[in-house]
Image 1 (tube, rainbow, N blue to C red):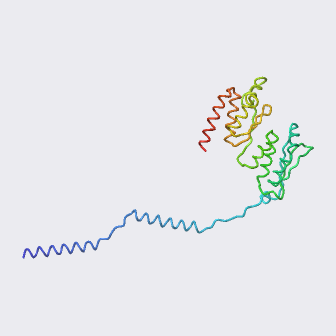
Image 2 (image 1 turned 180 degrees about the vertical axis):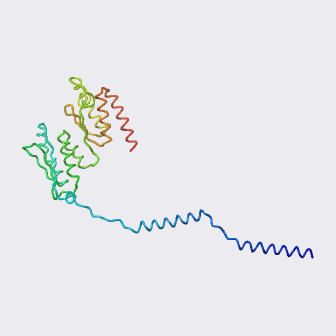
Image 3 (image 1 turned 135 degrees about the vertical axis):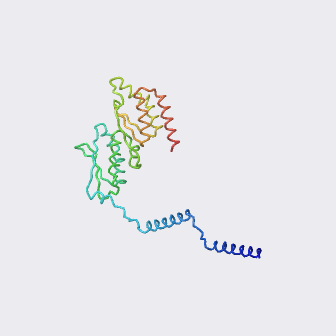
Length: 249
């Protein structure tokens, strides 16, 4: 009888255990719930983002941007540039009229080159490009070099005086200008070739044409020459800076 009681108690215990396993439910992990919520939120955001369409506006012509008003720029021409301007007028006139669709003339009374927009002008920045082009030629650059201001966007002109770097007078000033030019213009040509710029020396004025980074290198070299550094040391410095810039880009 005792054995029978033991077997019945074991069966009931087993039945209780089986019933207990059926009553328990599997608990979902919090990570899976978070993932599902994040996925649902991402789907809702993508649907919201795809719902509104971006407005598409047609390009506006330059005439409408300016409101139909005619804009004009005047570039004064010094007396020593009259003859070069007359000789190269066709080279200056052609890109301004044919490429930039502007009107240009040389006013004999005021001695100014006048550039203005017209109905055919499409680019709103054409007037500024043409004015920079003529100004570069007036400062003494070749027409072919000044044309780069029309063709390329990231070119600039910078002008400074030798006395801005160091207040020199008399022979000291002329020697500083001579150090910049070098024998037969050798130093100036070397700086131009290494820094990929164009430099014009006009009395005590220095005009540099090039990109921002290249102008900075050329300006530093010229300032070092004005302050008295020997050309050989300046050559080494600008070559090192130029090679570093070439590796970076």
